[in-house]
Length: 295
Image 1: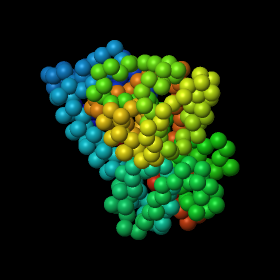
Image 2: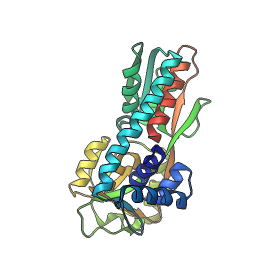
Image 3: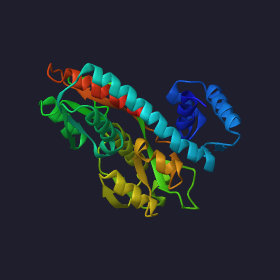
Image 4: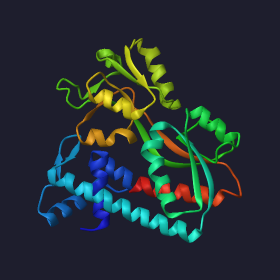
């Protein structure tokens, strides 16, 4: 059992399929399958229940996944801490992002950076995308982590990851369909994410106009944690960013429903301002984020 096998296995579990894991790791699907088979043969157990569309961990697989995430995370943290320490970064970094991205993506990296650098301080703000971007342009922020914004006004933008919007409902709903057309979205009460994902919101609005669907929104919030709990309770279904709900889908607490005529993905981008005082810190923080996401 080696680190690469653990990374591959972890990707299969977190992404939910061999194909998705292969895309994330830039490998072929047969290469991913072979690594998993080798791992299962070495351990002498089945690690995955393989379905037509999904690969879910067995009890032994879930145990290995929990250990693998810790091992991979510690490896990435060690590498990042050593590299950052060698550069001797210091200073104050002002970061803006969305609530969902802050909780799931940015906050763990902030903790890693502060843990190893006594001379670094960070200010983290959660606002709507347009407000965050405006503050970055006005010099009130040094970094913004956002879904790709149309027109960057000359600011440097480095892609961090691809994110999708998934329609999800309670994993305990026995009548939940595997796939629907957008016209069928009114079959259940609608839970709405208040945060702005500009490109998705535009596609969603166009489909509403095209189909004439009228949705009954029973609950709305910009807090991802609250929305997940509400949907898990069975109140309705709604679109949420995949980075925030993959764990709940993997564990069966939420179920993804394919919307055949509305499939959307976007880049999550690291925007930054040019500035001599923070340039080194901005670059180190970006590399830490990338390593955190690849773990």
